[in-house]
Length: 284
Image (cartoon, rainbow, N blue to C red; front, side, top):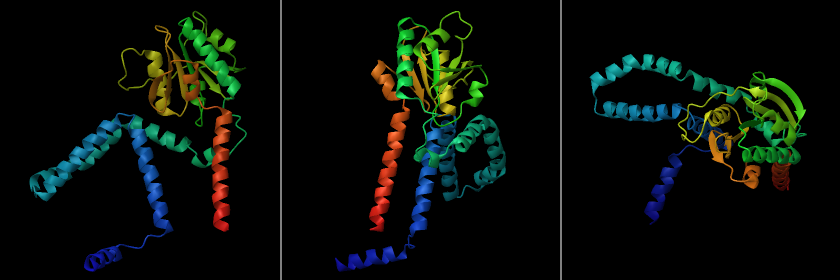
């Protein structure tokens, strides 16, 4: 038994010492890998990643078995393959860089005045309008801003800048009116624009979903906005967020999918309370 313990100690002694810097590096790399996988899962690049893993396994096997001709071919075509990959997946790479540039993890943890977040009253008005339109099978597309800017989307539509109310939303999406086509954007408690164009998703979705659903999924893949869809054919309500599309059976289900200003402020304050408590305990 003692001999085994001595062997384990000798093995452990061979490992390099781990300091605070190493732990920080591990955490940063883990977060980056997680964010990368989270992004790539909802794009065509996911299929590319699986293909690259197969190719990597094939190259490893060729190297182990010393298949010189195959290794020679791989060396010759590797540069061209990298360039081709960048060209083919240029839209996905552009989206990834845009998302990376628009994210601010620090400000998400610091409480602010919540001016860009929708209040509970605003969410109530949105939910009331949504299910009123669902009853009448009035098609609707409502984009609610979270952290990332919607300016590019707003610029494709007509500026409204009106206080959010159920009556305003219902009137905008009323059939045969000038503003009913396209999406509405909401920033905080304001309807900022209508008739906005949204990017269409290339994802494989059910045939039960139409163009509005594909547009809602498209904006959820390129931003962190929450988008509500009312189907003109069935009157069903769906929500697109983080590249996923979910049905909202009733008002309570829809409410649970839309974070309010008050909820965000409470979450941030709770984080800071935990942070300050841990800091105080470490000082003591």
